[in-house]
Amino acid sequence: MNDIRHSVFVIDDDAAVRDSLLYLLRSEGVRARGFASGADFFANLPEDRSACVVTDIRMPGMDGTEVVHRLNELNDRTWPVIVFTGHADVPMAVQLMKAGVIDFIEKPFDPVRMLETVKGALEQLDDLSARQEQRLETDRKLGLLTPRERQVFDALIEGKSNKEIALLLSISPRTVEIFRSKVMDKMQADSLSALVRMGLSVAPQA
Image 1: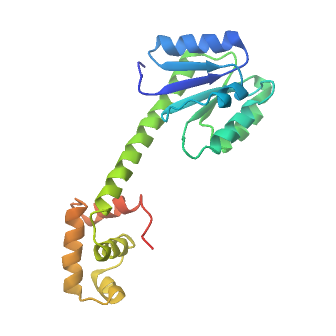
Image 2: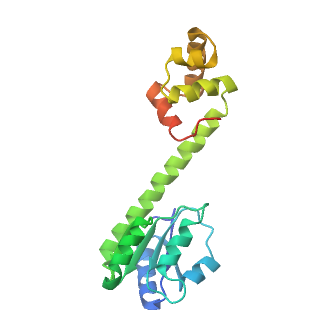
Image 3: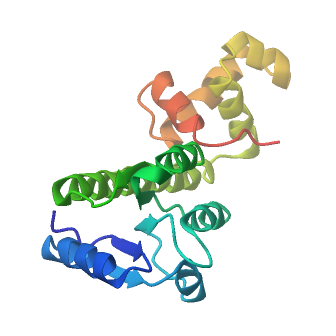
């Protein structure tokens, strides 16, 4: 795997299980850090923005269910979560998947399955990072538009025709064409479909 761009946080009160998983991940070149409880994890909440969390469900104090719900409340972090659990907790794990957990693994965990699942979670982070970078680039380009050009942009991504935009903005269709050309140029869009894809990631300006 050999992925040092992201971190994996392992939460389990069983030191033997926790250390075993940390060893497995580190042997594959993954940055991994362990926590003995959910309370310990949140008391020392890592600053990493790109990370995956692997947590046990059954733990004293704050259990895995509460860990998942508290992670969902963190607006500044989007961390994929994997839970591992005993057979009796499978129904609970299924419910947690409905709350956003990407997968659950039964104990004793299979090393190959665990690595494949963590790899999938880290790939999700790569996809998320790419989308965030694309969004930032789109926002930067939108900042180059004049107020009128932004109005034309919003109308175009809503699917309005040049004639409809002209009526909406009380300008001529020819003027719409001029603004449309400027919008396409500033947004570096080579087609209307490319412009629409950019628009899907941003909310229309009020």
